[in-house]
Image (cartoon, rainbow, N blue to C red; front, side, top):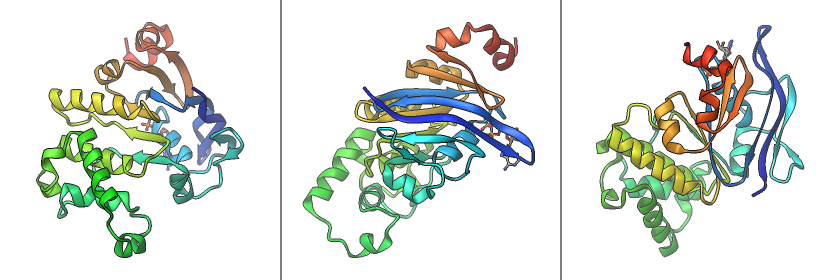
Length: 246
Ligand code: ADP
């Protein structure tokens, strides 16, 4: 395993308020990682910096072998380098079928001309089925995405990101609003996806993070407060004080 992402001493201020304060962390190229923290800890700002939406005041975001600094690159350029971001709300094409959604993602929605004019190959079809299998929607390929449950829509969107074969998948609260069964499915799905790429889950739900069974980074006031297994960080007095509110 080698390092895929190295966030090096980033700081972000909004009108003089430090949302991210000299934050550093590294993400290996495979496996799951959870980032947790209370409201206002800086989780969204962290994701915005890594994906190029927000430019930090200082610090570097190194990618791959460390030779490339993502700071200053556009969101689309960063996405093309292999960084996929899943927002909290599912954004699938409701009027299209599950297969059509995956097919569009496979042919790259960032380039509509490619989607319109590219010929659909038998390999595309096989790949769509393989992804549907991976996300557990193979028996729903012909259904309209709008008819899926909330959880199924989330899986479809994860599948659409997987179709683009990201090296790092950044997922914001994937289990929000899900049933217990759907949460289990989501854990399995993310675990499978993390076998061949880095998956970073930003969550506040401790039970879900426990199921992920991975290294956890706790953010507070834009800094790393603790890092390690969930048991380790939840027994840390600082974490207990600020995060669990005990
Ligand atoms: P989290 O996602 O962990 O809840 P955020 O990254 O959204 O935290 O926010 C971190 C801090 O930065 C919060 O105090 C928030 O109010 C502040 N903040 C975030 N975005 C902005 C903005 N665009 N303008 C001003 N303050 C912001």
